[in-house]
Length: 567
Ligand SMILES: CC(=O)SCCNC(=O)CCNC(=O)[C@H](O)C(C)(C)COP(=O)(O)OP(=O)(O)OC[C@H]1O[C@@H](n2cnc3c(N)ncnc32)[C@H](O)[C@@H]1OP(=O)(O)O
Ligand SMILES: O=CC(=O)O
Ligand SMILES: [Mg+2]
Image 1 (cartoon, rainbow, N blue to C red):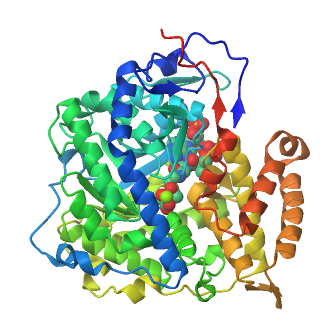
Image 2: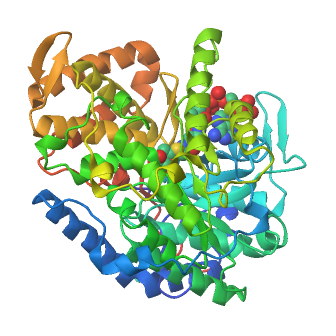
Image 3: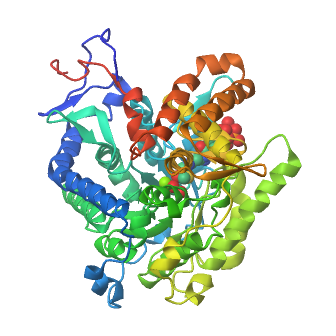
């Protein structure tokens, strides 16, 4: 954690009792970090911190049971919730009936926010999570961007290219994804403790934008959210409490706020009905967060040598456990009257090779066709260049309908209620190779270097990489090493060992340096990233999250940013 002792004590943020801001002062940020908005965030923190602490302890306790050999499963105690036919989620708000294509991207840079809103997608999910490195600057600029986006005033001038960016006539509807429950916000202290990151993200955005959002984009509903990385319905219950408190304080109707929960952890797939039930007044469905889901599969089974995954590139949606997860999610959502959203294909446009670009587009089309045929109501796009192709697939299949919630159609419905615990856990098939270890390392190191430098989503080898995909690289290397996996090295079998990894890191770092050039390599944080990634892959205990382990390296404290001086 860096401290900028040279920062002048004033000007500084005007904070309520018990709140301290340790991030850099900026007049633009001060318009977000007002006394009232901070009091709102502090109120959320004080009411829910105990429940969050408890939920995190329960996560650790469940992991200890999985480490001891227990398998995740449907909870017998909540069978009545799963089996009861008599409940449904609140009706879908008209403003978000059609979510056929949703673009995602970080809430900062500003230009990208405008591009996403103008992309032709129905929804833009502005991300404080997988796609954003949570530096103080990114978080606060992201809040400024979202406030201006909702107000309709967001503009940007790219001086170098002489380009002006402003909103078009029919911008996408905004969803915001706050961080997961596990991440602290070290620049905001409440009663001397770091705030819970997602309550800062949610609280500041809600406080500044709920009124404009509801009267504009939400047509009487909203704001709308995506909720990441939950492992149990008790965590959804905390969000329900947060929403109800926010609605009450804002004086808006219960059920105004709506949220789509990402089902992206293995434990959560056994809790989908329970999650929807907790959030039934606030639900906007579920989403297949496939990349974190794969990460979670490895993490949950970290102690199990019989559950090693094949190379990352082979763990796609065609694997039985992934297809089963998507089918069960669709069945669950449609039974309860809400959207079943698909996930992210990792391909992005390839600028300098038309044939390779067409091949990438074809993979995206196939992935989206599989989703819409399975019964998904909409899906994600990583890049504006993919939207026409994805729209064509979804709109072509839906034939003018905004979604297929009521259709009871698709492969998932045809599969009936037959998705079992065994289906959801079936180990994926495929080869484990030294090339897989190398690829994980090359991508993991470059992602960590980018993240430390403030970029949370990056193009690498023509694929979108973000925190979730990088996590797969990290935990897969760790698991292979931990269990001495046998890897194929071009027909020869070698065992994954720390010595092999050390050699691979050295060689891959040299390759990366050659690819990015010596100057960029020296100026970037590659060497540091190499050390962090190696340590994480060889740690005796698996770190819960790459981004949590590395978080202190992006925290920059400016003592005096809020106290003792008050404006
Ligand atoms: C696992 C998950 O959680 S998935 C969801 C989280 N991940 C994401 O959201 C990733 C979103 N995608 C991205 O961040 C980007 O597409 C990247 C980093 C992969 C590639 O970005 P770039 O290298 O900038 O792509 P590229 O150079 O092709 O961009 C061309 C234009 O498209 C814009 N663009 C690219 N992706 C996006 C996007 N997702 N949203 C809005 N605009 C975008 C760029 O800003 C650029 O605009 P300009 O012509 O006005 O300058
Ligand atoms: O957040 C999405 C994912 O795939 O992870
Ligand atoms: Mg994710």
